[in-house]
Image (cartoon, rainbow, N blue to C red; front, side, top):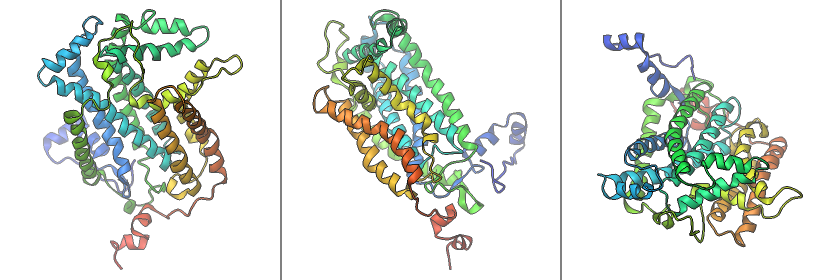
Length: 427
């Protein structure tokens, strides 16, 4: 985002002048996250989750690279190598717990980041590309997390891989062949573990590349804001540094306190105890369940229990599970309302807080519950509303809704009027 009033980077020291001429890296940093990057002055704490997501990605990459130095990607030693990391490697237990809980933390902040986008209309023009790249990041996260869950080679790792890869067999004609190609055999074994380890190590760097494009795309139109009103004047913005660097820094401190509490005091709270049992293909766990961040989509998968004409229930569940994320790609065109923010859309706001949010909460809960009643029925009802919300309700509401009056500018939404803003809020 470039405004006429944006500050230009002007190095004063001769060494920095020389570096700026040969390799303008300081200029890039200054324009990206420094005083040269102007952002709306009314951003609330929901805009901090993007920065926290980047922090989580860095935690995962650093801890993952170190763990890979000690991990054995072979079914004969994988489980024992994880125990070796926990017991014999200096600070290995902390690295392993930080990596495992870091995955959960990553999904928490990304889910909140996505729901902020739903509510404040961050997917609307001119920010469609930012949103589309964000959905790609989420899909890559899901793939990376699934492959990482297999690596400890415990009971839940093995049977989770067996169940999830088994979904591809529902694809007509090519399903079984594709599953065998993916696993390198008829069931999860050494070939599958090696492939998943390689991809799990590689994909975080792919995610990092897409994140860089995500931030690049963000800097073209600039950040959205809680009002959805575009920047009109210099009074609508403040430099990213020091204002939002300080604000992000405060939330980083709070995040690290909560994250450290999980790592040091309850590291297994979000895991499954069966994964501390070595993988045994001859003994099926009583309740196979993925990690908690997959639960809503796992609930949608299990919501289909009856064949429809010639389409098997399993195939419909697989298609619905993928469609639950793919529908987000079309949201910029499904929502045709000229108003972005849910704060000024009374009907949309009610349907968001009392429709979509409860439906997702039910899917989260049912995805981790046994595949029995009443959880299956609740999953079916929540899945119906989930798809209806995006494919039916949002387009209709965007056409018939009468939004509340928008403020003239961002400054007016903060200080009350532009006259007050011009006098520093006095008089």
